[in-house]
Structures are given as C-alpha cells and as structure tokens.
Image (cartoon, rainbow, N blue to C red; front, side, top):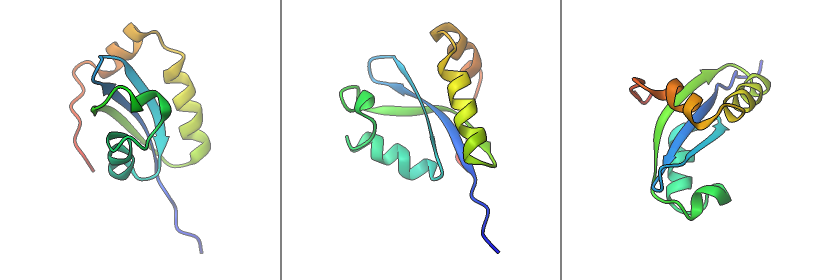
Length: 90
C-alpha cells in the first residue's frame, strides 16, 4: 500500500511586494529553499519571501490545476484571496 502525499498550493509575498504562487509536498522545506536563494528563479532576486497563503490538496494534479487558477488571477484578485487570511503552519 502506498502512502498518500498531500500537496500544498502556496502564495509568497516577495520583499518587493510581488506575489509568487507555487506547489510543493513539503511546505516548510520549500519556503526555506526559496529564502536560501535556491528556490524559483523569480524569487531569488526578491528575497526574503514570506508565506501569506496556502491550501492543502490531496493530489498533485489538483494542486497544479489550483496553481494555474490562482496564477490566472490579477494581482488584486490574489490580494482578495489572501486578505484576512492568517497563515497557521501545519
């Protein structure tokens, strides 16, 4: 029997105020990777980053679909999504 792996769709706020959306199966490790300068090319020049939003999903395909939905939002749409959201690490 294979172990189920949860995935996370997350939004980071970069030091320059821009937002970055991604997916991972280890949220804390991925944020550390971003902040060490070894994450996505986009975030490397915009450090530090901070987690402002995440959703837990059951499957990678679902995470990818949700990531694309969020990325298609305007910045104001993303800001509406994260407004009032308080990050509580799992």
